[in-house]
Length: 284
Ligand code: SAM
Image (cartoon, rainbow, N blue to C red; front, side):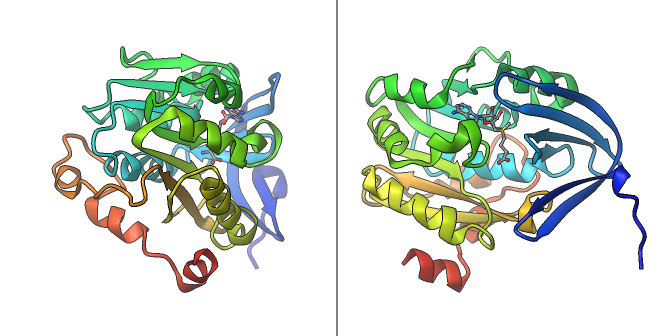
């Protein structure tokens, strides 16, 4: 049997299993006004960002998450000029969003400025677009910001939040989605990380579809992708569209994108919406 020294490992236990990463040392720890922020140097996954004990990202696999949170929604909206990111303080989603030339303004609203400052220090490769002239970074509660947002002022909303505990809890409710619906222009799309299909299908994915529909989103879809450092190693994002049918995937533009991706391709885009039978049945 392989022997490990738990002192040298970071574990995130969840529903009787645990994601573990072997660490070299802790690089940073602080208690911000909202959450405990930790950064570790790991043996094989680069730097690891942890908020309140939950893995947020590692240097090695965050590209899968950030690309899948951004490109499927942006290549589905016919002309995504105004994008709002709720959460996302590490900068990774903003970086992907700003690869799209159509985007004229991207506003990132994270409640906790310390997440951004710590990310700038330990994940500078994700923060390359924080000073882009098209980017605005705000540090306030996304729930409050969305309540006050002008009607029909946004094309795509990306909710890149923590799990539905602590400050992120309200971001998983029909009340919040109603504010998003009002703030989205005709044809607008919302996408939100919706946790693990294996562990959270009943508790998060299905209720998210229901809450989105209650809030007025006529079309809802979930896509899936692997993410080995999140519980179960398998993750989803759920989209809500304002119109009855999602706009047609801009496949040709995705195939001829002017920027490089490491995970996302036009084929991955289409394949990611193919769901296993248990999810199809649950969401029918
Ligand atoms: N990729 C991550 C995941 O799914 O585990 C999430 C990344 S991220 C850094 C999440 C961010 O959401 C955190 O920086 C946190 O401060 C922010 N957040 C949580 N609740 C929020 C709220 N109500 N308004 C704005 N940002 C919020």
